[in-house]
Amino acid sequence: MSHFVHIEIHATDPKALSAFYEKSFDWKFTYIAPLDYYLFNTGDGSNLGGGMPKRQGAKPADGAAVNAFVCSIGVASLDDSLKRALDNGATVALPKNLIPGVGWQVYVKDPDGNILGIHQPLTPQS
Image (cartoon, rainbow, N blue to C red; front, side, top):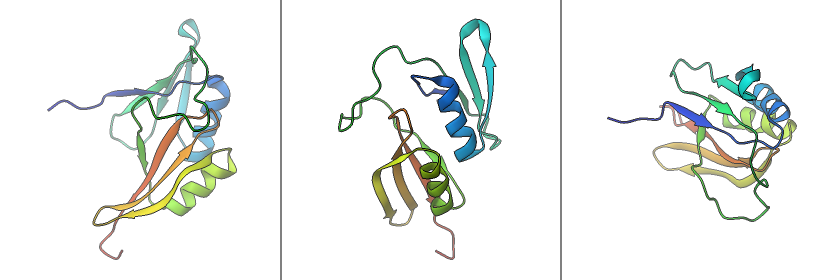
């Protein structure tokens, strides 16, 4: 079966945006100077990592339609993770909702306007 092995988050200022993801989600970034590229590791053991290149055009305008994949980050506590993201410059794109039988989901815009989901799966106690 095919699966994702690498994702990219385009950034107007990759150094600044990598700091947002480090502070909000504890990701680790490594700068590769010859490529002007930031590799990241989510540290979750899934072997899924990614990179952050410099954006080649304008960042998404407020209210613009989604024109790329939207990835969701799995977390233990949606409320705690959402607070950290908001404290570090994110804004809510779609409010927290329950997906019946699946979990809680919220969508935010990172400080560069990229939309990402934050997902907390249901537990047997939920």
